[in-house]
Length: 149
Image (tube, rainbow, N blue to C red):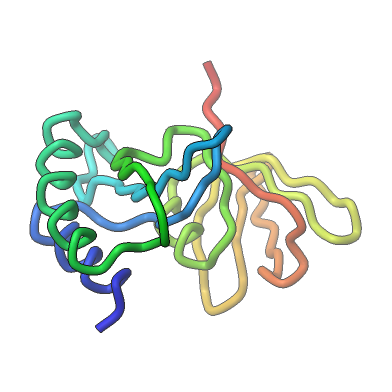
């Protein structure tokens, strides 16, 4: 099994879902970032992730990384939510964001701002002004979720 699949198993054990794993360099510090989202849906929206859940997950993942370090050298483990506004870079990210508002720009410069309603294979479906627009995943150059205040 890979490190990411081992982490995914630990995430599922606390009733969360793995959103992304990344290695980020900020200044002279390397951060191994594990982003998780809730599996719980409240009022047609995904529930938030509590700080206690992130702390518990940090305690579960840390010993695994002691045995299988994700990078050579020093790093810091950071476990948290990807945030309410986040980049969408994989089909999995889109599937986990169904029901949320998204901004998508395609390779032909068309911009879509609306509700992500469905994902089928490599097709992304966005409701814009009451009409469903279909965008092929491979044509997307930039995408993110957004929150209207």
